[in-house]
Length: 244
Ligand SMILES: [Zn+2]
Image (cartoon, rainbow, N blue to C red; front, side, top):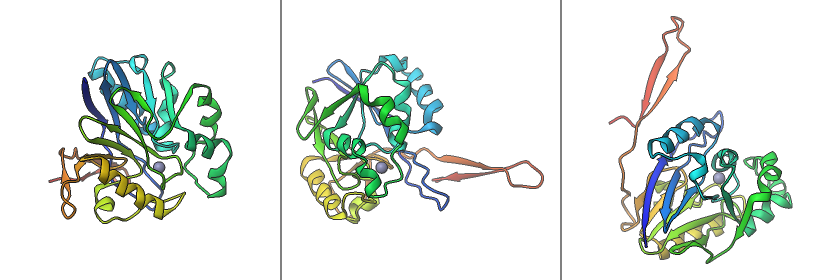
């Protein structure tokens, strides 16, 4: 099996009281001749995402498949620029958005107009579907009913979407915000531990789950610089997150 992974956008574990920032992991998986983008990020990610693809000599048309871990805006919005790719979504998530079940649980993160814009290109999958030889769908309900991960079978690497938002919550067995149920989200954690050695979370760096007490990140975090323009002299101020 040929397999290569590029994390184009790192997940950032950050919350604000102004609302979610939604900086999720966006990964390019090259496997057995197919290029798969795992999640696509939101508007604020678009220019950086295109830049990262260009650095690899790629355009949006070079992506064969878009794999959506679930249908929340921060993972879905940039799907609209990959006009030639098939869009993989779980049957259960499809039902969640098509029957407006998301409204009954007051899930505010579903980008409603994107459902009709994208649905013609949906390819529905479920537990065990191999989207390419060596890449298997693992259903991870809890955060949303149809949340799913993608397991690289030979490597024990699991792309988890928001079934695991960050390494801290996973280690603490603390469920992510759950529009289905926290109980099922915790069961999904147990399923992940049974299948994978390495997890790529929705909003954090890849980590190894070899230890249940320590967090073993596998890559170094890129600092995030925030520029604030509230200074009276207008010069602004820079705050660097995750500085050493
Ligand atoms: Zn989400």
